[in-house]
Image (tube, rainbow, N blue to C red; front, side, top):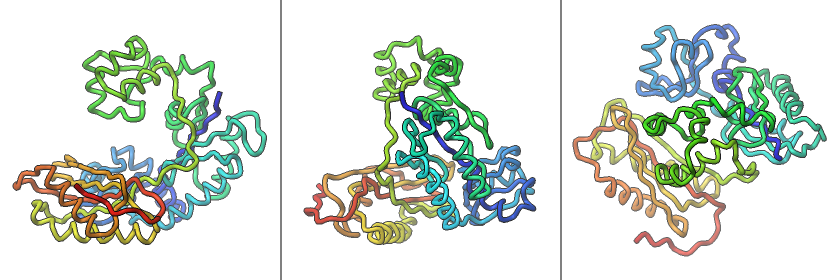
Length: 351
């Protein structure tokens, strides 16, 4: 039986800024650029009371809260503090799976301080984080990653939620399906059509039925309904992606975007070379003026060899997307994924 902790910093970017500007603590504050098409990176808890949230457009955020205080993001500062937090994790366990700058899974089944209680470990980590950074963190403690992540959100902010093995069935019985990672609004609607709204409802459905309805994810849903998640904490998480996006002042057609693609390609390729990595996958992202996102990607057996190949793959992706000429976009982006350390590789064949 594993002992898993999920640590999630509370409104991380906003909290970092408020630590330096305590006079704004009780005001609605968001971290966002002042670009006309900017989106919110993080919202303080007073801002959330107005409905502001991360990934919301700044324009919408201002409508909800005209008096909102906007602070430009400082990602270098956030990375430095994130590093301090991860150094704290390393005092307790080498089994750390970072998910982002502000959250991580820790396997403390056997920990470096020989503390028998995972709850005690989580409490000490939260205390260490506060003493070192002045920031609060919420923690979920459970027998697996699925439950630990849900638990960390249970008593936010600055809270802890513990799910003991004997409490799992009771905890998940009435748990709304929207709490499951990966169950967004579209999936919620599909599940609602099957009259499924809680994990308890899901327990009544046979695995083969869920697989027929939802493919591989149906099997994951079946296991979640039993409170089962066998995924280990992955110490060496594969580097996720290098990506760059640009948001336009005015909506542009695909043809009008051409010069911007070239700039994005330069940026991601430069970042790839600087980090001495190579990539086997390329993704294209376009966001329509109604915020609908179009995406397409390709991966290859061998890494891209040069910038020209990246440009060729991107053009092929755009062709395969069959985008109507009249479509207009507010944002475009290029991503590189399936990253690995640089090494000599045979030439990539695109066809």
